[in-house]
Image 1 (cartoon, one colour):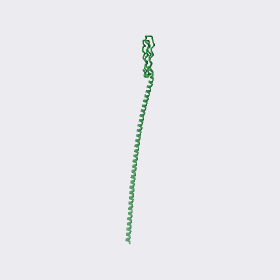
Image 2 (tube, rainbow, N blue to C red):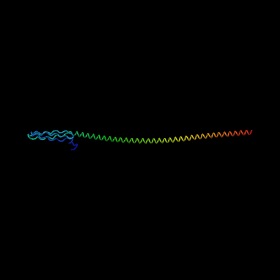
Image 3 (cartoon, helix red, strand yellow):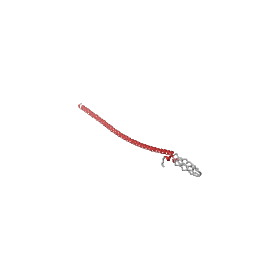
Image 4 (cartoon, rainbow, N blue to C red):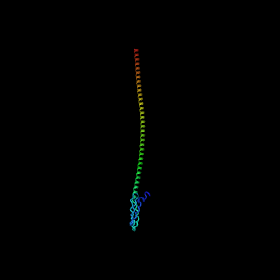
Amino acid sequence: MSLFSCKDCCSGDGGNRGSHGSGDGSGGKGGSGGSGEWGGSGGSHGSRGSHDSHGSHGSHGSDGGGGGGGERVVVVVVVVVVVVVVVVVVVIVVVVLALVIVVVLVVVVVVVVIVVIVVIVVVVVEVVVVVVVVVVVVVVVVVVVVVLVVVVVVVILVIVVVLVLVIVVVLVVVVVVVVIIVAVIVVLY
């Protein structure tokens, strides 16, 4: 028997045959209706047997009608299956989207961290280079200034010494000349 055939869903099995009639010739009671498949209601009772002559049995009651209403169960089953499929598909889509979002966020974080590290390294290197250059320039300037100061001081000292020597020599010469002149005058007069 097929699971979703029209016969199975929309009609039930026939009812039992009716009982034999009584000895007075009245027809037997009809059989009860068969129950419907997939929750259908039972069929109606069979008709009574025909009235016969006295002493003979009445005929069997007719078969009960098939049960109806199975199509509603099929509709419910189809709706439940569709809802389950839709829920499963939605869950799969949400999980996939969540995984994609997580992967994208991880990639973005990694890229940002790498960029920040590179920028920090470049800035530190540039700062170190600038600091080294500044230190070198400052040292050179200080050395040059010290050398210039020393040179200036030495030159000034040399000039002062030379001037003092010149003055002393001039004074000595003057004194000698004066002494000679005085001596000559004293000798001559």
